[in-house]
Length: 259
Ligand code: ZZB
Image (cartoon, rainbow, N blue to C red; front, side):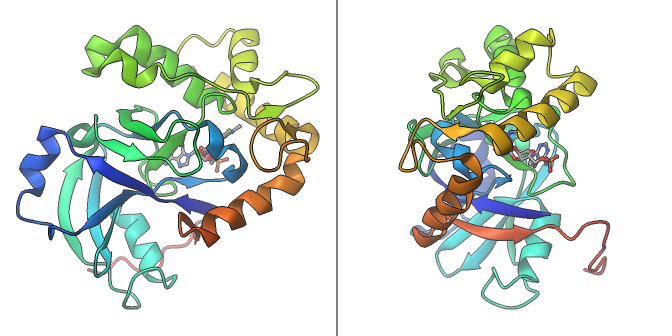
């Protein structure tokens, strides 16, 4: 699986994370949350970034002043893809649970909403991608369903409602589902909760196919272009700006289980 890994730079940690991180990072350190995505062309519509609240993550030293917040499994894979300074080495400086970083303020490259929050998503799969997922509620049914749930139960989740209420803007126009594909499918399929995983998987499939084969950009630098054409262009633009890099997930293959 070939992902685009995006770099969301931390602007402000919540107290829960500051407590764990105290003394562990140099003053000039730039820390990035690094979600893996298959839809770089939708990055204009990011409204937050998700972590699994009970998932364990690490902060890993990538270069002298760059640090990544990802699962340790992803850090190991990256170390064997030339992403870290030294081949096969992924120095960990801290360990955090997703719940401890909820509320972190990050910069989302390319997004209309430049400042977004780290929010909890209970359906994040710890073993997939980097365990960090950027949220595009216009085009991802899982993200849309999760956002509705976070707004409805903000107290239960211990978040500020306004962190989840950022405007959802149309990025891609499609003939069958309009320009807010995720909202259309979630409503049409009567999906009530992020836990409706079976229907959400189906909605995701439909959204992928319609978006990729029929979709047309209605926002951004490639407005008017087919999604199929715009996707590699947006990806390259992010990579050229040093806001993203390619990350391959070795499928069904264990590279190394040793320390
Ligand atoms: C932004 C985005 C925008 C995504 C969209 C999808 C869509 P797949 O197809 O099953 O390989 N994702 C990445 N890692 C995880 C994880 N650990 N747990 C849960 N979800 C994860 O899934 C790849 C997509 O699943 C990724 O692309 C990411 O969300 C999410 F408009 O990034 B995506 C119709 C989907 N639209």
